Image (cartoon, rainbow, N blue to C red):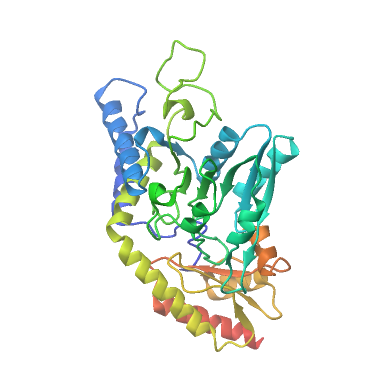
Length: 377
């Protein structure tokens, strides 16, 4: 099967990641829970991963790197662990439901209020409306949530412009699920206070790997309670990080995959950026002659191209490509309803091709040929 669903999860992993996971499965000790050599060796690899993540994203030290099972869990810790009664939040319309649903829950519980920042520009050239963002600011605005890249069409908001529009006391939360591993992200340079990561996408790690990185301006409250291997005499969670936010056994094989994945990504980041920008441009150029298809993307380093057919539903196209042509991609709303509303694609959604730098021009040509046949029917 030709795999074009990398925005959902990376389909191919580097050999170094696979080898590291195989070795981790053979070790099978619990990091940080025992004092024997095997446990200590595993704990060192976990520590190495914290260091690599903090360094790679210009973060605030290893102790402010929290491992999670995915980006959604990291976002929940960030939102439920930081926001308090009376806070106001501004969220971009490009956000995933992993941001929107926690905010809606907090709003319905009477904890916060929030407003949505719209896009400005046409479908292909849409970007976050910075003037509208400034207008939405209120005295009680505590946090602004802006994705590093849209999972729908590959839109990359200008985080520098976002941060410049905010008073200094307002926190900036960035969902790095699609941006991380596709272009450089610096927490300190962009003024990001909370950055969430999905290891299994652009960082080439396994499913079950994620992380939350946060600055010294935030002190997230525990979201989960249990054993940490430290302060065991106390019935309260430890009052220091990372232990205070990491209850229970860590997913050691997933963390090891993230360690090797981030190392691979940092070594090949320029190559990945250039390759995906080229492949998305190649796909968009090949799509142009197909008269019934309309694009919603520009060339981008995230590898995402979204389009719709004038008559056929996006999920029908995705299903037909899978069952008839053995091509995997995604149709529908991609768990981002406000983005589709902003793009005018809420009714029927979009077809999303999400490429990896491992994909080839030949595979794109096969997709175009299949779309041409569907168009004729």
